[in-house]
Length: 261
Image 1 (cartoon, rainbow, N blue to C red):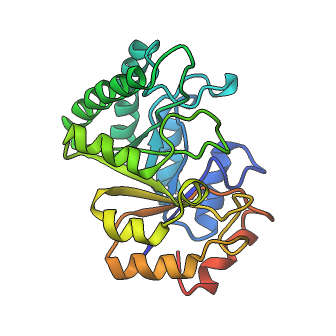
Image 2: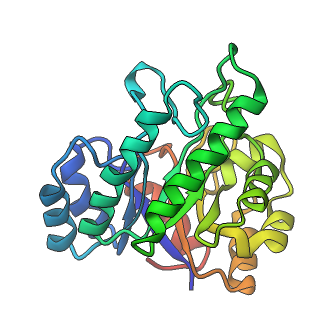
């Protein structure tokens, strides 16, 4: 049975963040995710999760100043100390909120540094973060992001993350496979999932073009979901899309495709 998680950074944005938990519960969700918790107190988020009977399944390591254009620090040779200082903060939130998996964003490549400098920085930073997380039995996922949405993003193809995993050989590091990003950069969606499912720790979805809900674009989600069922995928599927209508109406595809929350 597939487990869908409402992404509260993308859904229910018509209300303030703290009100989105109850709307997710009202819509029938048992699982939620979002990008960052750090501007809120742990106690505030925990109260919303418990009050609404929700399990949080994912959030990101600190990724710099999002409002000023940062999209992650993992591969940034100039901000290693900042990246590493964010890891214990993320662990603190994860342990308090019962989250067992965190996402690392590599960020954009800097023109004044070589590819190899970025790669070496990322390898060292992932090793550091994974080691810290492993002490608490937490997993780390690393996400490739398409360069159309974020020009210059350092990791943009699944094979790059797989190469990273092969070099690190760490048992608690996996791929975060975002179907939307993969479709824009590489295609081969089901073939990749068939071949690499054991290395995929988390899946996120949106349709293309537009990054709206399944059924609004070219991606054959009924086929993808059937294949994930067949493959025995037991992780979560994050609904990281921009609704083309209001959030509640955008969930019609779930029942239409024969699934339930």
